[in-house]
Image (cartoon, rainbow, N blue to C red; front, side, top):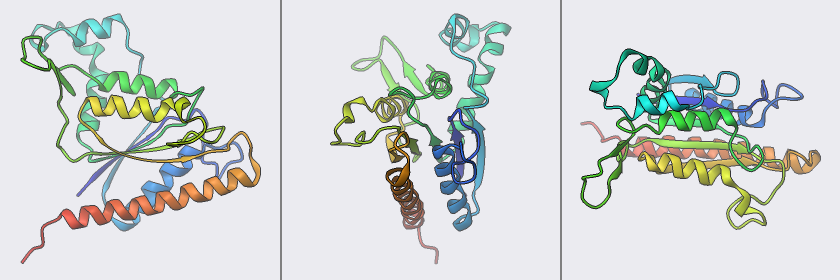
Amino acid sequence: MTTLLHLDASARGGRSDLHSFGSHTRRLTARFVERWRAMARDTCLYRDLGYGPPAPVDGAWIHAAFTPHAQRVPWMHQRLAESDALVDELIGAEVIVAGVPMYNFGVPSGFKAYIDNIVRVGRTFGFDRERAGQPYWPMLAGQGRTLVLLSSRGDHGYGEGGRIAGMNHVEASVRTAFAYIGMTDLRTVAVEYDEYGGEALDESLRSAEAAVDRLVDAMLAERAAAVPATA
């Protein structure tokens, strides 16, 4: 059985297919999870980073995180408790489905706080200045996790090879942060034309929903192919 971790980071509540001012990314993540669970009765955990963002990293967090575990005093464990819960949740999932809209060319602040809390020395990446070659290493590498990034953008042309692809700091920053801790299997789907509205947006939504459906089908087929046949 697979565990899905469903993350929403939009500041908008509700889904755009159900509410006039709803979120496109919440619409896509819900579609992904609903289709997946209709075809495979797997466990799904949910966290709303838009309405309940993690506390931002501060000096106390940094002090605690970079203090060896055995040397931490009670306040340090308390300050890292939320981060520990987020890391445990991430490690316990095989598929992470993240709805992350583009806000001013980057990720929403709640999702940035999430990244800052899960990129943790000693938990998701290792560091040893005495280690020959590379003192940093990913601790979640080779464990079969997949990150599905479902995004939305006001303009168009942010995709690879597009007219403003260089301004797409959502996919680039998310890819970099998760690869750093060892999660390199990233699948992406995005809605564009949100600020244009009309048929351009409607067509982009239809295309994105079809892409989500194909992605679910492909990932489940990959999983089925990876399961050894029984006698």
